[in-house]
Length: 439
Image (cartoon, rainbow, N blue to C red; front, side, top):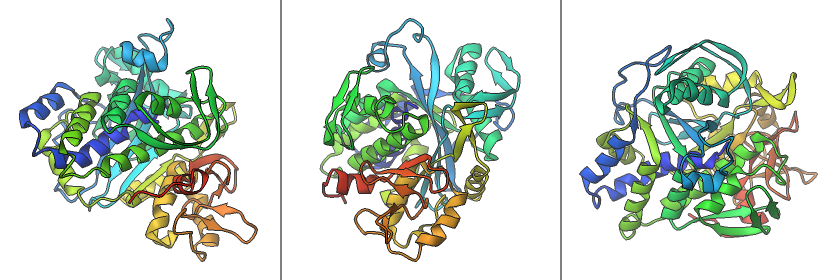
């Protein structure tokens, strides 16, 4: 998901998580060749090292990377999903950007989405073919597009985006993973499709996607289109779309992790290959042994410890169709700089609610107001199935973000601003679509 979903955090994380289970069945040289062929160099500048060392999964330190979903119309597969209009062929946009932070103990994963339409100030950028001066009050996704146009390659676009992320957040991330439309489609198809709860009828004339309300098992194309659409669903904002992207990622990861590592090795191997072929990985992570080691270190990771959020934003004073980061974003970056979970699971009263909350927080726009809101909700016990708190007046509240939940579609809204900040996926799956939860 922000053609978000295809952003394939799923690829990055899901493929990594299952890699350990398929490595025995896979031909090492086969997998190694795929990884090396798709590796991308990082252009040294600002916060980026020219020769970053390979990640060490056993270092006892957090592992971080920026996951970029590229809206490229190059090739028939990408055009079949995104369109083939003359004015977009050859363009390279970053419609999805997510910061992924795997905790030092490998038990928690933070995933934070940066809205593509948010206005930011970015530092000078070095590309393969020259320097781009510092820019002010520009859309975040223009960083990738401008660097690709100037440098003419993925290395320029991803490196400039990575350097900007570090400048904006105070983090010191040295790696990235880039995926496009076709890549996400292949990953979803490699696990046989994914279950998605559609909370309202969808009839999108731009993609031709038509879905009735209810639970659907979608193939890669339909699932990716659902994560991309903005018309006739939610509030039409980029922020609301990021929450569907995160929902898709979680459902895809759940599908991959539900596979039996001992009986489904052939399918898992194909998932790993499909994911790796679909990803362009920076050189600091493009190492077979390092990825296998990372997978081994994550073998006990559970989905309840995936915490997701969107950078807190409000409408930009200069343009209501754009957004700006709120001061609460600083609280979010402070937690991540310290390597802490973006939500304190202890404050959610149960491990179950942390999943929801993380789901809901999925795009939680508010980490600071959350703290004050949480003080009102932590004394109440979340429902063990939905992970939500029901107030005396019937209002549904997400315990991690403090946001209110729309009972009809599971969307979470900031308690202070009313902005669309997340999606209560456990509530969505168990109540709106009423299906049993997967273990």
